[in-house]
Image 1 (cartoon, rainbow, N blue to C red):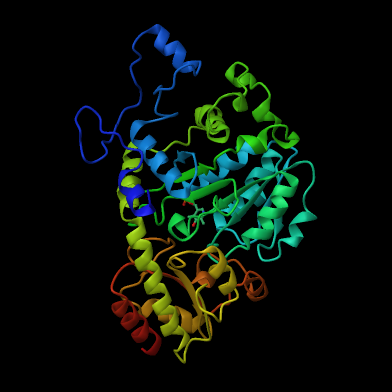
Image 2 (image 1 turned 180 degrees about the vertical axis):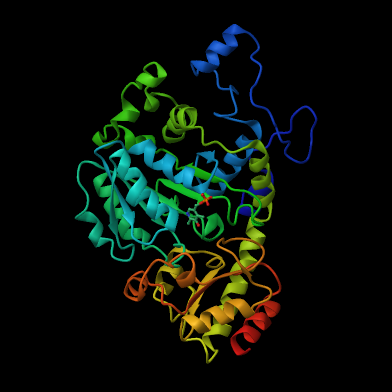
Length: 420
Ligand SMILES: *Cc1c(COP(=O)(O)O)cnc(C)c1O
């Protein structure tokens, strides 16, 4: 099946009521047939529903559909994108270990890796995703994960996958890619040789800003990387917390199995069935929406590039952009709806933000409604002029998340805001 068919049909087998729409199984727990059935489920002799902290039939459809869309074999849905990121790190690293992270990350991922996991004894070491040669010098025997974003938020950089994957394979380290901005419609990290794809489903997956959620997708045959690999002995030796279970001994995707049985069990950062149902609705039109987000973003990028009040426009599909060669190489069907542009100074930027009528001033992305933000007065307010420069956030920088309204109306709105 192709993507546009998968998002409609994959992973749903109609139950006894034969409902066309996937039902919301709003239930905390499930009845066992008898005591033997219950024991078999807990021993994994049989697979089935136990308790919604671990699994749920509505969430299961969402997980299967998303895994298939990413070209993976299994997925674990979580209560947020940040939970998906934390669970991925916790599934591979423990106190004394380190992870290698792109320096171009989402703000929450930066604070998670630089501060929160540090208190758990896990060190984050940062590399530039356009200079992957820096990566090799950071690796040692305690390195457990390479983490980067396919299209980074907010800097809108496209990672140079090929050399990163080469280094990861040489050292037999798991690579995880936050694919939130690109979505599987524009980028398929698992097909590019990465092991794990992570998403905040709060963004383009719901598409309408309806719910917070996340998902972690595992590639096929990850077991081959885990076996006889001294970095990941917790997958290949008995887990005392699950009466001696060895994850790689079972014929199931081991990364997802451990995340479900050990991490969802103990951390409980599971989505509600209702939110999984909302994500299923969103996925159905994800391919159509991404095409529109992307086409409009490119059109608006060209409009801004030609406008005399605009100093610079950042969008990966503009030939003037440093990311253009990477976008050509790694992205398909467009480059998503995020773009940024620079005007003369802080005050001009504020005026433009205030004059727009269709764009809402919001700190979110991936909504069908267009969004405008001025990082220097909001997300990056605490930085001084020099720090702003180093972070790649000039004081006149404005970021747009282009929605799916008519692009001519969005251009009219930006035009009156720039010239007002
Ligand atoms: C929003 C976002 C996250 C965090 O997701 P939440 O669902 O808000 O927890 C992580 N990574 C990227 C790239 C994001 O845009």
